[in-house]
Amino acid sequence: MHRTKIFIFGYSKRSIFLTKSLHTKEFRITIVVSNQEEYQNAQKEGFMDIVVIDMTDDNLLYSLDAKPIDDLVCVVEDSHFNVFLTLSLHAIYPQNRIIALSDSFHTTQKLKMAGASKVIDLYQVSSNRIYNILNKPVTTHFIDSLLSFEDDLSLREITIPDNSFLDKVMVDDFDFSAHKIILIGMIDRRLSEQFLFITSGIEHRLDRGDVLVCMGYNEDLDRFGKFILE
Image 1 (tube, rainbow, N blue to C red):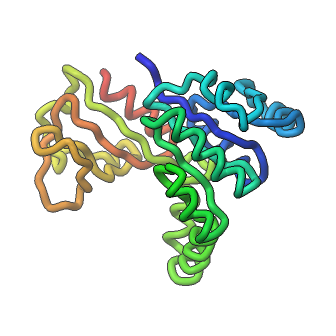
Image 2: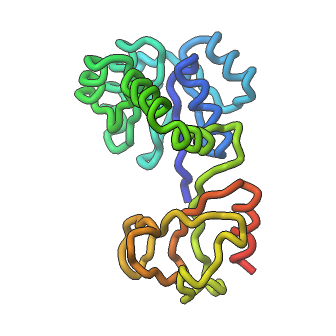
């Protein structure tokens, strides 16, 4: 079965944190660059799957052979070229999700028109972050710890396997805190295929195939994942 790959176009100060974070979370990443300087910088950071191509050549972009489930992330430093690249990728890979960074309102509009599925406006993100730091410092620190690639705290999806002792157990009857993790929500397949927060007021029964979204330190999450297999 083909696992999702993330193609990151460009390797600069805009994308270095994102690329490191995804790499730490064990996503399959291919970095696509257009010059030797970016190639060498990515190599120095330990990345191995790096492709150097002329991104203005549609034939070379097509040769990347992205599958429909792969994500394409446009983070080249030149905003005008980022729009051009988004347009080209959308034409070549119309079924793929394209995520692009923007540094202005006008660029955001152009990227959306070019076919970007999701545009991340750097100025909007920055202004929201400043507001949250000033008004919600504890929450902001907590979210930072979740997103930081240097921190062991994370969210994880854990599927209840066949023949698990959790099958048919009510959520309220199982003590997740004893395993040093917190249950945030779940996909209760008896009710819906949608994610449901555990605080939704519904009494959930755990069944095989349900997906638990848990928060904790990686070591504890690893231990719990093995525990429910026993």
